[in-house]
Image (cartoon, rainbow, N blue to C red; front, side, top):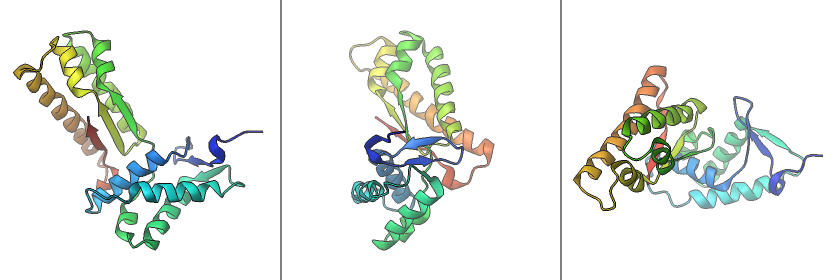
Length: 192
């Protein structure tokens, strides 16, 4: 017998990979969809995610749900509350990715920016290839201080910070241009 976490069905993605439902994941996917639909600060995302979570808990006889069925259910919920336009842009892609820039900087070693950018490129490439729609880059300021070997922020830190952000944006754009991916295949990057 297989026990599912919190009694929730697994979501079966297009590549046959199954993921556990996570309200945070759905909140982020709804936020991205709302942003694409013209609502940059849509405050209802966590409430809709919680409603879907509650509904999924009632599906005790469903151990797994195809992503198409899950997407349809979320779109219907959005339609019911008057946000059809957000539902049209909603896609339940692979769960969000979280990249610790500090860990990448520590792996590269203090002062080894080339090694950092090489590893960052590889890691970001994995996220892009997995089909994720949301990626959080964490610890940018601390990462820069590690790479620059500085305790206090200075002008060279600001320059490296801008270089890392530009690199992430260009790497993402280049990946989608190469694949000729439609606009709905964007990766929403959040840098913290």
